[in-house]
Length: 393
Image 1: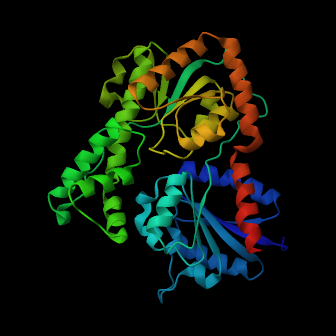
Image 2: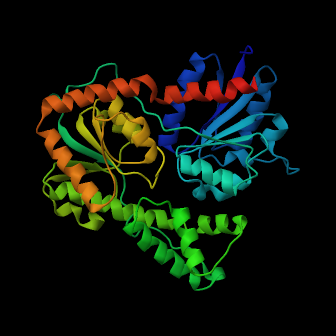
Image 3: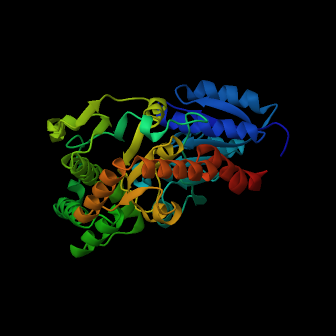
């Protein structure tokens, strides 16, 4: 690698994304890169500092999560990173329809990585201006070299996540006429009835039922206006999952906001805690026997909660996806679909395991061994180095 080759890594106000970035940064340094930390709160100051930094070093690429700083332009309207010749690797850890404007502004040196293979296809299909699109699964992190035995852990089942409920804003769709609201309401009903589907595919089908045909450009804009649908159906199933485990008498500890809004506070076996930092979540997992995970409507992707739990000795209990079924060896997780029967089977399996400390310990050991081999954010940094950065040097 060229001597003093550097990477720019963004620092934002979102602690979770900064945590991911910091973990990858350590590996990049091990691989021989120097790191320039770019503070997104003061971009103009940082650009001046970066320009001075570049007088003595080669900056190969900048890497960030859900970043809107790739559209930064000079006063003349030219993309800053194109002008500087810096590759821009933007890792989207949510569905791309949340980032419509960012995707439209992707520079000629831009790379979009997604944590779900459906998301990768969505960008490829609807944003032909994006030069390079790829798939990068979530990673996890381990608190220490040693983890507590399952028998010494205080929490039976940990859940970390917020309940959105009614805390979303329906978009103004008047420009589409009354059919738009009908389409969205039908899509929500269809997704709740058949939750294995993605939101874009259901919306397209509902539009066709109403004889509405959109161009790619029109549909991606419509999709960007309808992101609230994810909040509606996601909250529906989060509540359903938590209540199913609570109804079974399983002790659940929840960290997150707004759960009192759906009546779960009536359960004596459910303990509510406040909002915590990403670092604290890792500590909590290291004292939990099992970790419950609901997916943010990812049907062919991953989530860091799964790998974090594995790496810290907690057995993941997770809503499934095609990617997870392909990659997690049988017996290393309790995975379930969103039908009543599949959720019930997940609940049954968890109750069974909580009564079998030896079996649960065996799963815990297998989970950690599996995740340490290839599911950390350090591994994701190595993948970016191997598959992208080495091709640019």
